[in-house]
Length: 403
Image 1 (cartoon, rainbow, N blue to C red):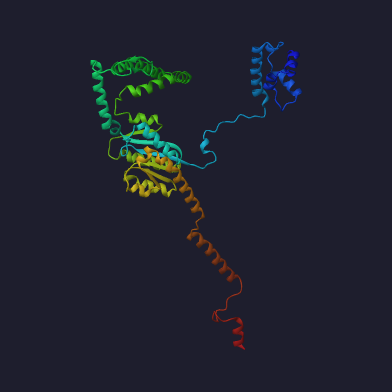
Image 2: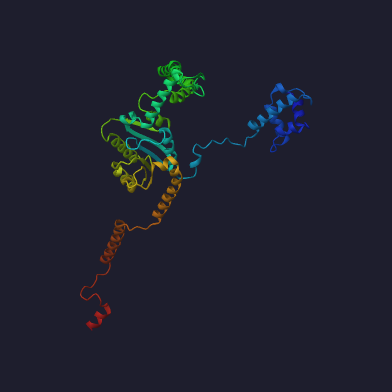
């Protein structure tokens, strides 16, 4: 190590070099000692004022050295995974969605699921998002989507005949190629990208262990790009993609049999099971079905907060629950704003319950029975009571009468 180089840097009058690495809390002697340990030997040459490129390089090096070697007092802070919930006791929320009774109609399934999730987040931490439906609900196609598909089919026929031309060409979102008819874009996507996607999936499924992990990391970006493009280009084979859209929004979707009330029974059992395990503190039910009245009553008996989302104004569920929102309020975002005031009312009610005095019959009975038994035992152990005189007469009166 060339000590002249160290002396040159320490005694340098250049403010840029000196201010870039000199820490104020170290003495110059300590700094020389630390500098000898970390400076790379390849920079040990004499520097002239004309070597501006070398000066910039050394400045960058010493800025890095100062950050990683001299800041010993600084500790690396681990980011908080839940910054919004730090220091605040928030409820654990579980959302249960009855898709047979309350499917999304006015907006797309993905948008409806996201808005419902945001409204539930105003009540606490949403950890469970569960949806149940039978196969008929997933096969059902709303009239608006049927009409849109019919118009799209007619437009494709006109484009193939050359009667109409699109203003902007259709662009493949995977490879970027341009097409002037929608059918050519669909054929290109199916023949090339769909086959490539099927090969990737089969390759991942056939591999095991670390090789599978590497393949998933390798193809993750391509598979996500394909799924985003396929959602707009390809038509779902079954229904209008209700289940896939809810899964994309982070919901756990379960298909039950087509028997009547099968989804309601499965949803009730799931709710009771989670209540038994104490996995939630606030229950959000998206349904208008009166079959869930008993479940909501049971939840309130277990001191759980209950919220109902439905369109029935005078419904039985809304009379039983702690709070209720309409589906319009969820879509418009009004429920998200009102959720804060609802949580505030819940907290005020909990505080009043703690301050409230209640008469406990069993506790009072045990307390006063024990006091009465002590009095009886004291009478037996002490002087006997003279039962010959009346209770209102004193012992002195009886003595006077005897005289």
